[in-house]
Amino acid sequence: MPRDGLITVEDLLRSPALQLRLLAGESGTGRRVAWAHVSELEDPTPWLFGSEMIMTTGMALPRSAAGQRSYLERLDDAGVACLAVSERMFVPPLTASFLAAAASRGFPVVEVPIPVPFMAISQEVAAAVQGDTGQRLNAATSIVGYITPTGMYLSLTQSNADEDKLVGSIHPSQQALYPTGAVDVAGTSWVVYQGAATTEPVWTTRLASPVGPTQVAITGAGNTDQFRTLASATQSQPPLPSR
Image 1 (cartoon, rainbow, N blue to C red):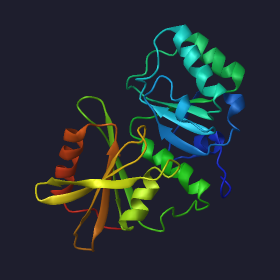
Image 2: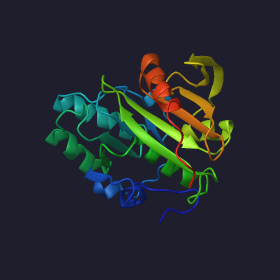
Image 3: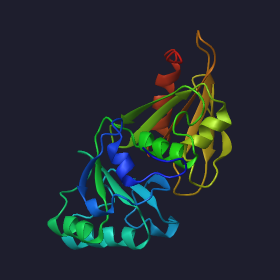
């Protein structure tokens, strides 16, 4: 079990909810993970601080053996704790050279099954870092992941937490998100939060339900139209009852 304020790659691999599978780098599974972040950049290192778990659908991974090895070496040299690649998305075949480099460096590479949203990993890490492995928000929260027709990942979070607490929990290890305006979706106003250039935006609104108001938030790599489509579908259905 992770200790308050500390979680390792091994802890995440042992989580039955995440169902992560180790592909290479077993000797490095004791590495501490400070936060988990999605990046589809071929070189995200200028924006990293160290001890990150980088999660990718594979768009950033080169196809060549030399390119894959260089990508891994850049991450490891920058102090990244682990690379998590999504199952059956855009990940090219991982070359023997890539896997050998991961093994020799003790750099863990894990596979994330399709049903598990990246947000679930981020929340697991955030819960440990914030010293609250039981209830990160002290609130009932549910998360659902979606893949858009263009292959982009979006997640929908529903909670009885306040707006600021929910938004702050979505990218907890990055620079603070701030409201930049609102968009109207069929008469419902969604507040748009943005942060650094590499941080995915968050749209959030409060919906009425038979059991009381519910805060919902959307984030991910989709475009504005895809956010709008998910927002419209979300507000057209009653929120799930809190547990």
